[in-house]
Image (cartoon, rainbow, N blue to C red):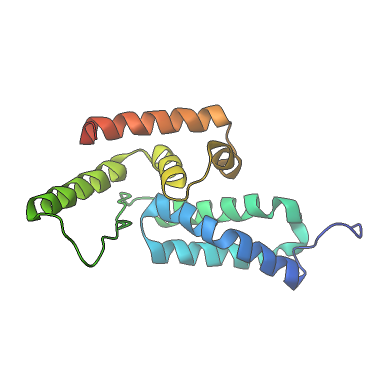
Length: 170
């Protein structure tokens, strides 16, 4: 090991990896399984595995290692379950001047949107949510998922087609 290489086994570098990647990794798994607590557990398990195998993992490849471990944990845990995404990102203001009809239509729309996102194929759903919720660029998503930018664009395109079919034009 050279002097310039960061070691995953050094607690300051491990902590930096955790602080930098844990939220992104948790969201990545959450978008796959729809269970926030399960995603948290899988991320914790991935970091424990990284710590236990720190001497074998290059610092620059740690994110890919964590992603692979967390994804494998996800696949093993929810192998026979149907993935249903239940999330509530919409936060309305406490004081609301909209009409009851508008509020009802808005609630119905959010339900249709959640249902439509939940039926997206997993690969399309994760790209869609990483882009629209986490505000990641296609290039950032491509790096995270180890895909080409064109593959990310194709998944997003297909996701939008499905959503438009299920929800209609907005």
